[in-house]
Image 1 (cartoon, rainbow, N blue to C red):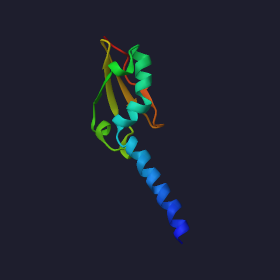
Image 2 (tube, one colour):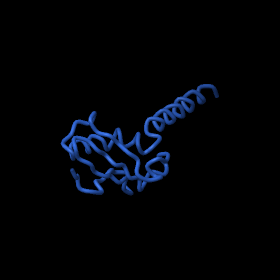
Image 3 (tube, helix red, strand yellow):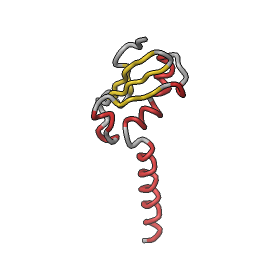
Length: 96
């Protein structure tokens, strides 16, 4: 019985650790969307500022779909939407 408990405990700990990294849409965007925003805006990622624009953007990862994140940097701004495939898509064209 004790040999069964360790793998289950290890898997549970791993799952909690992984979801903790991306527990909100902001965390998920930072890891998955920010590189795209950097390319779209032609601006280094460390010069970009992210802003949650709706309640979904401030929610936990299990309620992310529909999250809107505003990104500004290098004199430009754009909005990204988390779609039903959990992909960040540009919702507006970059503006100055």
